[in-house]
Length: 141
Image 1 (cartoon, rainbow, N blue to C red):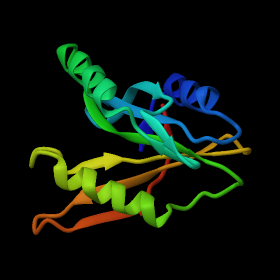
Image 2: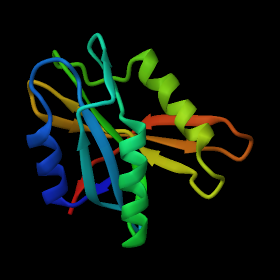
Image 3: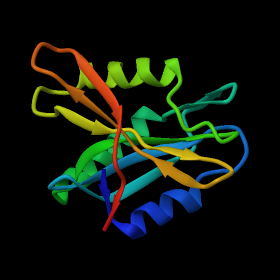
Image 4: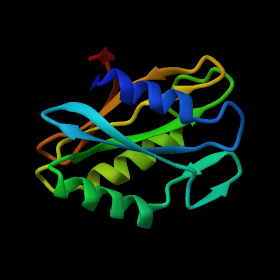
């Protein structure tokens, strides 16, 4: 995952260090994340982050006018948990299946608290419709 340093810094500084979870969306150009939007969620379900989809879709449309494109979703994990939950994986798969055929890859980084570190994950849509999810390398630009 290639990300501009100022965007990563903004994500890490804006995310809470205690529950409930929060998150946001990532955007950019040419496979480089260069813009983000933090979101406190549409509502909360215990400790889970539930994106405010209506608001985020408005932001994505605004980005597209300036030639920035949706590249993924980030959210917080607490208590040093740097792996995806079963719920995370199911949600990532649902998002990938909902994407148009032109979008074959999205990033799903975790902000791990209290370490305030980013652990990137990437999801690929394979030709037969299967979704492949793996941890990715973090490249700060």
